[in-house]
Length: 223
Image (cartoon, helix red, strand yellow):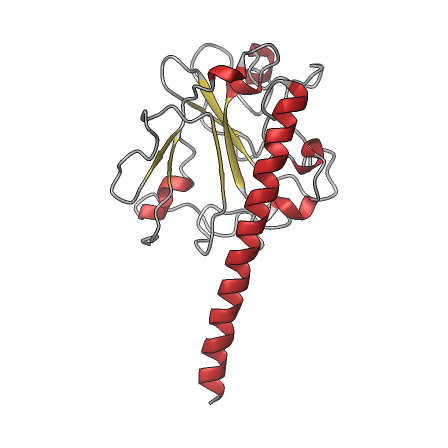
């Protein structure tokens, strides 16, 4: 009976966590929509690894001197810890908690981090899914640049199903994406900004933690 009760509790806990994630998804989506309406651009991501007591926690990561923030400027890409000098992207900076990867040739780079809750004026609790892991937020960099016409809404992100088929009407044209790591802990960051489990790209779930411009939105996640 104890074993049975334990299984039932775990199932109930999973349902509650899933519902909490769904509720937060709506809050985040609406906050981003309002941000775009107010600012004429999308927000830059916040660092995935910033601890709660850090000044970078929940805030857009961008060129420090830029006002408004701009995460699609050469100064930002060349900032220490993000990108080396020259036109070629440096390897992702795990120390920075922000990742830059090429999108499609015509759309420029993709910036990957977490939800900038404080820049969106929402509770920091919305940075975490129902399982207590930080959301991943990816944006086509030029869409977070002041002066760019976001009404074009043509991005460089591709979202695929479990069979590798694009879920957008035009593959690789998604402007932004945010998602919960869910029950898969690989590559996920906890409340303190520490990676819970290293990313394993040999598994299907590795598509969402390899820091490229392709993400998976499978109904049934295979590990």
